[in-house]
Amino acid sequence: MSAPGTSTPPSSRHSTASPLGRALPAVRDRDYLLDRSGVVFKVIGDVHPDSHWLGYVKYYPDERGDRTLFGKTYRQNTVVSKAFGILADRPDCYVYSSAIGCVITGVPREDVVLHYSCRRAMATLRESPDLLDGSAVSRDLLAIIDWIVDQGADDVIGVTGSFLVGVAGARSDIDLVCYGPRGYEAAQALFTQRSLIQPYEGETLTRLYLRRAKYMVGSSFDMLLRQEARKLQGLTTGTGPTSTANRCAPTATGRSTT
Image 1 (cartoon, rainbow, N blue to C red):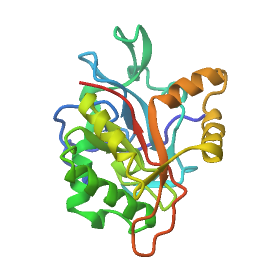
Image 2: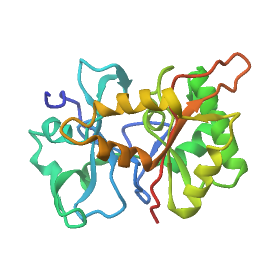
Image 3: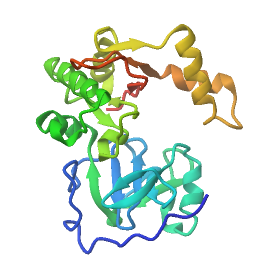
Image 4: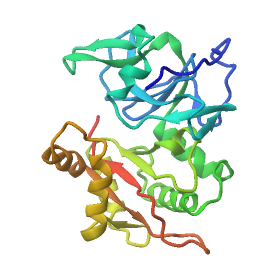
């Protein structure tokens, strides 16, 4: 794993434009943060030291990547531990967390350029659907957002993953995050809406576990089962007039953060 490619740091917090990123208000679990070197961090948890926002590298400049952000080619990282290697030349991104009890990665607060809020992204995408590419999965996401807003749950559920930073494609997953008991109850209700989501079961559930297992090298299958049990997962059913059932997997993480 190579270190992130060279990226020109913005001259100020206002020099990098994004319809989904804004100045820093409250940072929440599963929000994303862009730093001055062009690295996108995925926030972990709601307890952070005064010096850093804890998180791991989700996207970073690399010519071998398959995503484009701010006119640069980006590579996606899906394994938390690989962030240590990606940030090998940036010791300032290694930080001890008293809440977790070990050294993990994080972005120094003064280096943050943009904050991508999961909950704000939901409102932005509903107000400006033209930010999406019009693919079947994008239409499914908009239908899911409409349901969440109609239920009055847009303050406790947010959009995370590739749709949060605007690098989603036609084969992207839909990733949702819910906050607190009310958020989890709303997410459970969402996954009973068979017109929107068909939960994984039977053969499709087995394929899901096999796909997830490649990220669990060195760990146990029991741990994989426990990790997956924390989530609500399924296949979108296709909502647009020309949509067919998508192979992407909208995922609501079952975190009850306050």
